[in-house]
Image (cartoon, rainbow, N blue to C red; front, top):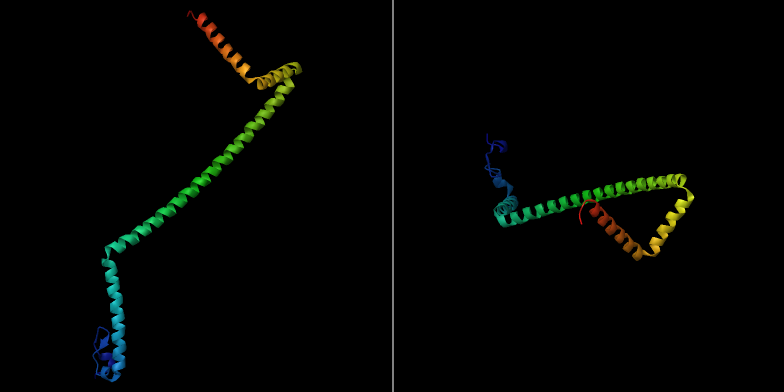
Length: 154
């Protein structure tokens, strides 16, 4: 018995006598399908052999990964900057609070005439900066000379 299930298939075509009955249109369709499959196979092989194109594709892939990594690092740096800025602001508030507290302690314990005199000195220093700086420099030189004399240098 030689029916269609017993036929040996080679390359997608059967060797049964019923193939002749299929007609020229079926053969043309099979030839066209085989040509398309062969074209796809040849294109795949050509792509594997084309080293330059593969290198370009790999380069583009690595460039994309590097850009992505750069964006990740940039995001983390910005986040770290915000954290540092927040901590600095918090520390500034703590210092400001302690300064206010120290100011209140000074106001409570320092007599009014001393506070008035200190305020006057600060205001005078702000008005006459150059003379205050010259006087301060003179005081530093005088202190240095006195100390040097006391240590036995002449």
